[in-house]
View 1 (cartoon, rainbow, N blue to C red):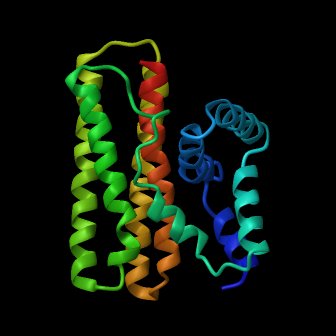
View 2 (view 1 turned 60 degrees about the horizontal axis):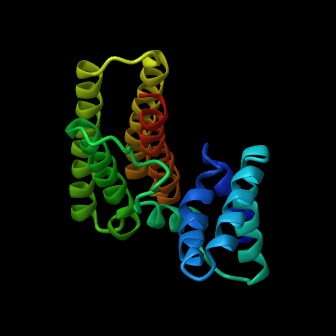
View 3 (view 1 turned 90 degrees about the vertical axis):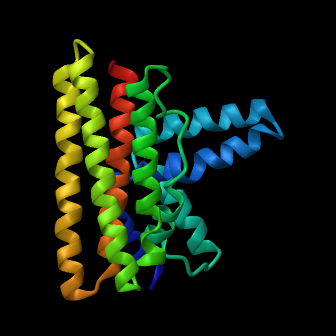
Length: 210
């Protein structure tokens, strides 16, 4: 796989800014242990740059890989790294339903991140697919529980984010059906990254709007 192919695959995802919080946030967290001020400055600079130029972080990472001639499947690597919780997305509220949202989202992301290890073993992968379906249902059930119990002004925006999540869940399911016909694992990785991103967006929506 050439670096150009890697870049093209990266851009087929609908969440180019995913590289910022999946790849760079852990780097900033480690840097904070060495130089807190420098880490905070760098984090703020990357966030500002990414906001103004979505995909910039991804471009930088791919350029580094290209410069080092590293044979790394960017899309697969992103998926493997995406299981970690991102503090900026975790909901701070202590009510059981909101903590359950954090837990259900984390569980789904973790299962999705195992796809590269399981996809080439049909029996194990079929079990992983079942686990993903269950995790999606549990997350949606928890979202609905929050809707039933709590009142808020931004319900329409939250409902829209839920619809986006459902849309990408169905897209992931369709991609799996295609995979069993064409065997193209990369398309599964791309779709799983999209679903992972939408899972984080669910958390972010409830964190900022509720």
